[in-house]
Length: 159
Image (cartoon, rainbow, N blue to C red; front, side):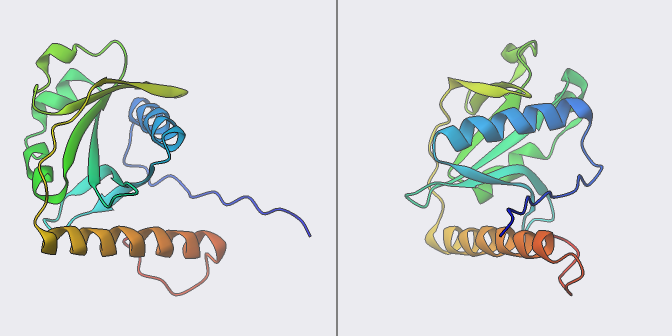
């Protein structure tokens, strides 16, 4: 029996800098036993850069900012709070972190890993939102795995 390596193709939305931050942040989270789903579509119509479900059922969203312009032109990140218990920003080590809101968590990340600079305050989700997000996250992860294993299968396209 041979081992199969599953590779999920890039969707082309992220810059090289954002992909490096995403990779490092996801490596950091995995080292903590937390596994995220990148680019998760939300009920609000937005897409979260990384969404994580921890062992206790807490949901984290990590918003990647690859530049100051990216942060200053983005007015949607406030909407992510209604979909998570904790909201973080992940930025490159040379990002001027003083411009980021203090009521969010902060990860400094590069392509090889990340460091937690500031823990995110907890804002518990209502039970019905938690259930909906948990199911959506699990189904999305399962569908993406299925699509990676069988790219010719008839699956929804917005994974």
